[in-house]
Length: 184
Image (tube, rainbow, N blue to C red; front, side):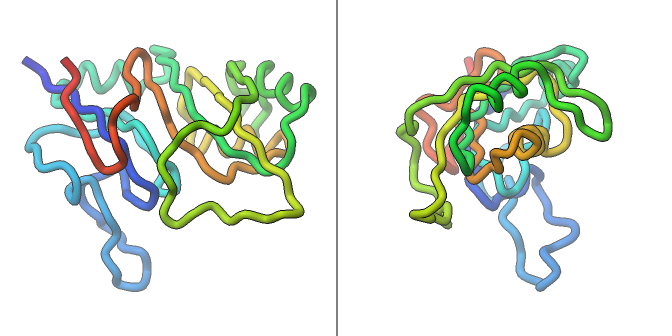
């Protein structure tokens, strides 16, 4: 029977079990092995070091491919704190898809939301009294490198904090940062 692990990846943790390159200072960086001691499971997709939230790990190669491969169009929902006020024009551009140098993105489902009841980030997001921010719920069905950050920047809303909340039917609900549990 295959195993599927739901992990709430904290900010600053690499989405891999070893740190092959280091941070340039010789200081070790946090990896999945600092939190998960299960042999034979591997991440199904990636989550940038400066992003937080749901990371799925499995020992089933077919399931790993189904989750991570953009051909399967598995929806991924992110809670995104952006700099600036997200107006209708910016949201419409995200809903239509954004043009990158490597081609257009698929349309996103996006809406402005109230500040979600998330855990504090360490280190905290820098607060500036003179610059407004807001939160979005953004769902994409592909997974290009730093895609959500690139999309929000393309519409004039740089990402301040990015939390992946859901992949397909799996969510972070009830999983504290740095914790994991098996999906049944």
